[in-house]
Amino acid sequence: MDTKLSVLFVPFLLGCIHLSVGFKEDVDVPIQEPLEWWQTSVFYHLYPRSFKDSNGDGVGDLKGMVEKLPEHLHDLGVGAVWISPIFKSPMADFGYDISDYLSFEPLFGDLKDFETLKERLHALGIKILLDFETEFKETVWTFAPERNQFYFHHFLREQPDLNYNNPHTREAMKNVLRFWLDQGVDGFRMDAVPFLIEDPQFRDDPVISDPADPSKTIIIKTYGRDRPESLEVIKEWRGVMDQYNKPEPKVILLEAYASLTYTMSENLMPFNFFLITNLNASSTAQDFQDVISMWLDNMPAGKWPNWVLDNHDQPRFTSRLGPGLVDAMNSLLLLLPGTAILYNGQELGMADIDVLWEDVQDPFGRNMGPALYKKYSRDPSRSPFQWDGSVSAGFSTNPKPWLPVNPNYYYLNLEAQKKAEVSHYNIVKRLIKLRQSKVFQLGKLKLHVLGKYVLGFTRSLPGEPTYLIIINLSSFQEEILLSKIIPEVSSLHVHTASVNSEYKIGHTVPTSLTFSMRPKSSLVLTTDKIKLSLPLSSHSSKTEL
Ligand SMILES: *[C@@H]1O[C@H](CO)[C@@H](O)[C@H](O)[C@H]1NC(C)=O
Ligand SMILES: *[C@@H]1O[C@H](CO)[C@@H](O)[C@H](O)[C@H]1NC(C)=O
Ligand SMILES: [Ca+2]
Image 1 (cartoon, protein in one colour):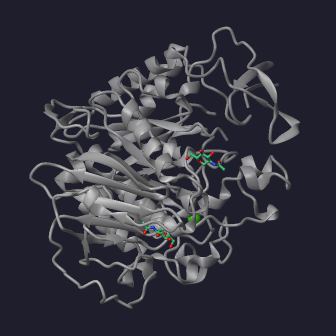
Image 2 (cartoon, protein in one colour; image 1 turned 180 degrees about the vertical axis):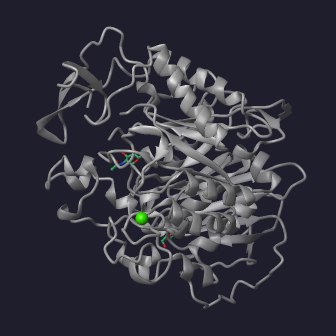
Image 3 (cartoon, rainbow, N blue to C red; image 1 turned 45 degrees about the vertical axis):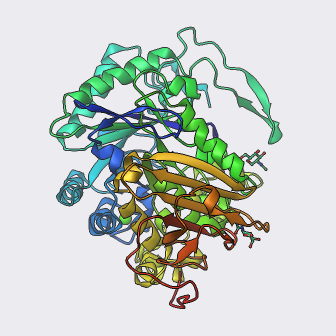
C-alpha cells in the first residue's frame, strides 16, 4: 500500500460570480458563488460488499442498498454517495479488477437494481457516483501464452494496464463514461490516475529491499507515474462530462498517488488524504494545525478544499488516532471549510475488526503470509455495517458473512444510536445540518493551538454568529482561557458536545475564566443563542452511546 494517497477532485463549474471571501484569515481567496451541490454536500463513500446483504449469501448487494441506502442517507443529511466498484469482475481484487465496464457483477445485482437505487436516491435529492477504474489494473510484465506476448500491469497480474497511448482505448473508455452518464449517474470516482500513461521507453523502475521485511524486495514506481500526459487524458474525460452538465454539473473524484505539485496543477483539485497519512495518536495540536494548513496554503486560488478521515484502504481513524476521538474527529471533518467525505460506518464510530489468518479475504493481506498480513490486509476497515443488535448486526441473515462483524455490534449499532439522546450518529446528523449555514460554507477559518494537545478553530463571517470548535487530544493537565480567542463576548454557548463531554447542548461557558475539558472530548461553541438553555450543573444521565 502506498501511503502517499491523495485524490483529485475535478469540479465542473458553470457561470459563477466571484466573491472575495478567503478561508484563511490572512488570505483573500475568491470563492465562486453560488456554491454548487458538490461543494455543499457531504459525500458518503460506500463499500458495497459490506453495506447490506439482501439474499443471505453473506455479501452486500444492490438490492440491499435499495432497501437501506436512500432512507439512511436522507436521515443523515448526506447529499451524494459514491459506490466502490460493482462492475463485472473476476474478483481478484474485490471488484477493482474489472472485466466489463458496462454491466454489474451478478453477485451485486443487475442494471435494473441499479436503476431502482438511482431513482430512489434522486427522488430524495441524493446524487450517485460510480467508481470508474482507469486500469484493468507490482510493476511487472506477465506472459500471456494465448497471445505469445508479455503484458504490463502496475498492480495485480489480473489487472493488465490499458494502453492510453492508443486512441481506440481512449475512445472506448470515453464511451464507458457516456454509457453511465446516459444512465443518469452524477459523476465518477477514478482510481490510480498517475499510472494512466506508461513510460514510452518502458524503463525498469528501481528495486530496493523492503524495509519491513529484508527478505523481500519492492519496486519504486518511478517512470510510469505522474506523467504529464496522464493529465491530458483526464482533460479529455472532463470534456465528455461537460456535455452532460445540464441541469446540474457532474463531478469526478480522482484518486491519485501523487505529490501536491502534480495534483494541484491544471484544473484538478486533489482529494485530500493528509488527515489520514500525516496524523497519528501522538500528534500534537501544532501537528494538526500544520496538516490542515499544509492543504489550505498549497491550494491554488479559487479551488475548493475537501477532507477525508477514513476509506476502504486504510485502518479506521478510531484505530489510528484513538477510539475516544470519534466525535472530535467527525466535528473536525464536518466543520472545516470545504467538502467532507464520510466512509460508511464512520457516522457510528465503527472500529476496525481483528481478522484471523484463516479468515483473511484481502489479497494484499493474503499475499503477505501469516506473519505479515496484519500490516497489509485492508479487511479490518471493511467489516459489515452495524445496523442493529440482531444476527450479523442486521447486515445479513447469514450468521457467517464474508468478513466477521465487529463484536461490539450488540451495543454499537445504528438502531441503538438513533434511539439514544446522545450518540455519535446524532452528533454527525446535527453537524451536517449545522454545516449548511453560511458561516460554515463561506466563513473564514482560524486555527488555534490552545495547548500542546488542545486544538481550536473558529469559523466566522460578518453578520453571522461565530463558532469555536475545541478538541482535547490529550491526557495532560492544561487549562484554557477563551477570552484570548474571542474577546468580544463574555460567554459562549454549547451547540454540540461530544458523547464523552461533561458539557451538554445549551450549556454556557464563560470566556473570562479558565476551564477544562475531559480527555478526548470536543465542543462546538457559538456566540449564537441556543434555544435549549441549561445551567452547567444539570448533567443529563440519559442513555449515551
Ligand atoms: C505522528 O505524527 C507526527 C506528525 O503529526 C509526527 O511528527 C510523528 O513522528 C508521528 N509519530 C509516529 C510514531 O509516527
Ligand atoms: C484534556 O484532558 C486532560 C485529561 O483529563 C486534562 O488533564 C486536561 O486539563 C484537558 N485539557 C483541557 C484544556 O481541558
Ligand atoms: Ca448478497
